[in-house]
Length: 315
Image: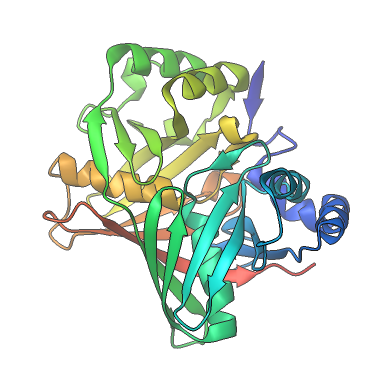
């Protein structure tokens, strides 16, 4: 079976429609569990762009089964649940669920939660305990009053991908070796989760994404990858990205903060950081949900800083 972002009922390009019938089902599930689900779009200042995330700020009474059911009904690539709160110390415990499973870390949902909490508590630093480790997030209002969040990842790492890993993934994607940029070798990179990084040789190759959903799901489950991070280098300081996420029940993610953190570690490992240490990642454009992520990496620090805005979604 071949699936594309345009055809999947769980594609993030259609996720904004979850404010209609699916949203009503999600609201019913959340109400039954005594949960209030907020909706934010992360890595954008436009509710019609970015990556939608569900946010539950009071989930202490929910068990894993209930959280998974709510995430499935919401239908976004992830919903974040605050399971413990210390508002005075600005420390929180977070869990993340895709429509199919719990994940250790999700960058865009962390940004969404951070902006939501900043609206309640005021801008400043927040600390989250996640299954992947401690994540610190700095929130601040920009000149227009919108809140921007900058998360600092757990220590990142990156290793060359094995030939068999690459060959199997290329077959599932319908790509071949000639579609890859030889200056950006395939790696498996970690920034809270593992992601296979593949660099396309052209923007046209990146734009043409139509892959075998079941085959890629099996490969990713076998190796424990959360997404396949497909990139194209426009310049040393600007990249375009797409992230298939079939293991989460979603064809494609329009903004992937965890993969962006892993990608920052990838660039550091390969010695490809620009002098500024900062790169811009444009994602979601081919899905109609443009997203902008800023990735800042230092040569001597294994942690990566990923920042962007988040805005509420009406409905």
